[in-house]
Amino acid sequence: MAKKTKKSVYDIITEKIIEQIESGTPLWKAGWMRKHFNGFAKREYQGLNQLLLSWDMQVMEYTSPVWFSFKQIQQLGGSIKKGAKSSMVIFNKKITAQCNDKDEEKEDKKDDLEVFDESEQEKDKQVDKKSKTFFLMRYYRVFNLDDVEGIDKSRYVNLANTKKEKPENIVKGMQNDGLNIQYTGVQPCYIPSWDTVQIPNIGNFESADSYYSSLFHEIAHATGHGSRLKRAGVSNIDTGDKHQYSYEELVAEIGAAFIMAEIGMKINYENSSAYVKGWSQFIKNNKKAIFQASAEARKAVQYVVEKAELASDNKVA
Image 1 (tube, one colour):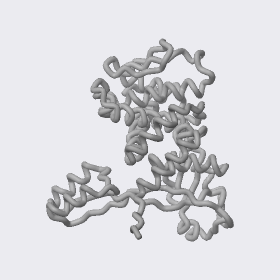
Image 2 (cartoon, rainbow, N blue to C red):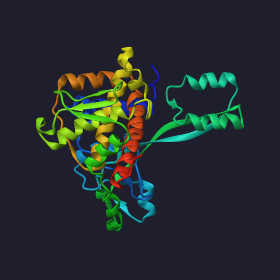
Image 3 (cartoon, rainbow, N blue to C red):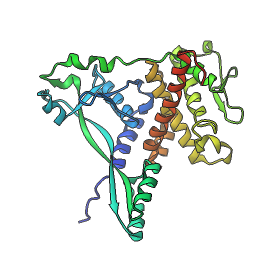
Image 4 (cartoon, helix red, strand yellow):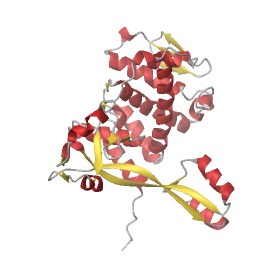
């Protein structure tokens, strides 16, 4: 009897995401995106965790974007409602190992190892060239505040009431940063060689949500410009690399969803079988793409929000 292969975290999460895509709605198009927090640590979840938790919050019809692990609930003296379902969040566990050259070759071939902080890795190598630092992806389970009993829930209300950026500050901040936005044409697009976003007037969209979702998708692309975050999918757009193009589109899709969460607007989505099939196949073929794209999208949104905050203070970067 063949031995059953243990699934990596990449496999588990990718299968979950593909299932959701093929059910009709990708995570990044799932209506209301929220900013989610760990109530015990009072810290915001990052990257892909925001997508996973937003999806579960909508499916389970939770009212709070605050979550706790089982141990954290115990430490607070609380308990979990009978029948409550947990949600998955991922984290990167830092591993520093002593190894020789052959060991390094073996480690590099492992699918479930991913170096997320190259600068830190280089620093570690300078200290001891025989050590190697990895970030091993793991997951744990959390429960929503709605399913927790026996604690003072009012202590966590302010976590959910986060400051929301104004959409005009998002736009103004990027314009102050040198991005040209032209309200013209029939199809939203970003032109890297001109560092220009072209978008039809808001009156051509069904709603303000649809308009800003499209605009922020293009603004997310613009963060990859050579004068900003220098993403390969933007700077090498003319190479005809289909994989790179699809990956950059994924970054912009997720980035737009994150920006919509920053301003508290709803993501409007109309099911397209071609759209769903395209993303499903791309993620099946590139298991790490959703993880890496979420990390890139987070950097893009941090960049955009920083510029928006400067604009709201009437400053120019």
